[in-house]
Length: 205
Ligand SMILES: [Zn+2]
Image (cartoon, rainbow, N blue to C red; front, side, top):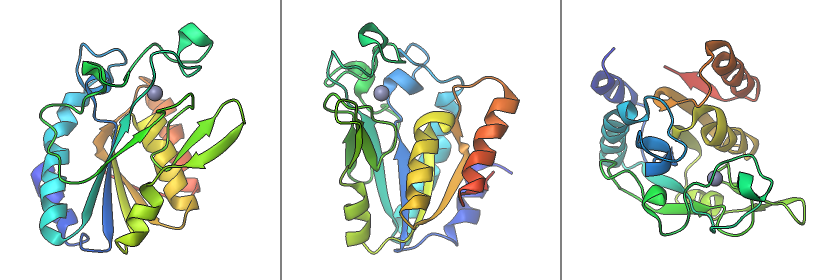
């Protein structure tokens, strides 16, 4: 099935109560020279654009998430965190990929000293608690109750966003063909998909 056909096939399921959440298609993740480049990430940009076009013409809402960190944060490995420096606010790496079609609001995450994986919540590492972003309120204001989550990376921020969406009561699907994992091992990717499915997320290919 070609990606364009897939977007058309999905179009019948789109509409004003649907939200498409495009997760972290930023240079540091999507460009091959980015700080945390996800293998094959540029392959999903045109399929996502096709989905965005279909969504927009159906009246669906499209939101984008953007990792947006301070230059020093416990999220980074130079401060004891798990990740190399990436998506520093205002840097090239933090910009959305230039070929990504922008058709809705951008929700920034990890903007303070928090970890930011899900588009819905960030984790305050000092207080040890999760805080909501504006995404849930914005979707509810628009009457959205069904979500399609795509973007980067499948096994990190896409997963976190989809799990939060299901927990918040949205009927949630992840479109695997419009996402790419950091993990190289197929068994690891399969485990991540299983984890999402077990939480009530629909995995679409
Ligand atoms: Zn980050």
